[in-house]
Structure formats: C-alpha cells, structure tokens
Image 1 (tube, rainbow, N blue to C red):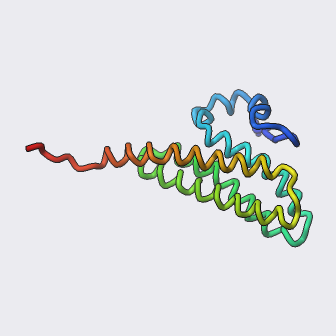
Image 2: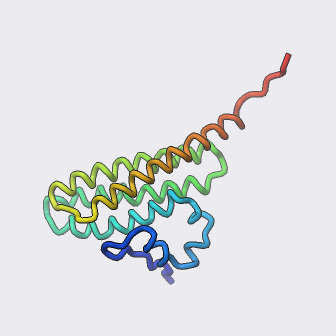
Length: 155
C-alpha cells in the first residue's frame, strides 16, 4: 500500500504544500528537519520539471541528471539522519549539500533549453536548503570534534 500522496500543484507555495502532507509523513521525526521538508518539496517540483524536459529530445539526459541530483538531496539527509556517528551524519549532509548545488546546475542548463516557469521557486528552495545545511554542518562538526577530541590532563 502506497501512502505517499505528495505532489506539488502548479503554483503552490511551500507553506500551502505543507498543509497537504499526510499525518503519517508529518509525524515522522525526520519531518521535523526543515532541510528534509525543503528537499521533499523540491523533489515534488522536480517531477513536473523533469516531465517537461523529457519532452524535448535534447534534454532527456539532462532531465535524468536533474532528477537523480534532486532525489539525492533528500535521500542523503534521510540517510544521515539515521546515522549514530556524528562523522557519518556530517558525511551524508555534505553529500546532500553537494547534490543541492548539482541540482541548481542542472536547473540552469534545463532552463536554457526548455524554460521552466517555476525555476525561481526551485532555485530559492535549493538556496534555502544549502543555507540550512550550512547551519547544520558546523553544529554537527563541532559536536563530533568535541566528542572525538583526545582528553589531556591539566597540569
């Protein structure tokens, strides 16, 4: 049974979309992470964009790259969230950040060939995502570093 019914309706804002999220998804602890919500929202937006891009023979491969990059953003946040080790968590958050930057690159190229009306929304969300990752990153790195720092005796 597939419970996922999330799909952005054309022109729908992030806040409007969030009101449509089923309780089974919104109740998951991972959903509390703003970066994850942004990643899933952009993934839903990308579905429409990729559908448009594959209609032009010149952009079929680009559409595939875009969809993989956008999908990787949320997948890496989810995988990192489930890691016990701070170092592992940081590594997956870094992967997610890299995928967000890659997604913006593919959106740029796709927009040249096949204008995407909602590109500003995607770009804005990916930029917010990157900013959220940068906020997460120092906290996780600092906490990991403090835990792994060798203890020294005071003299």
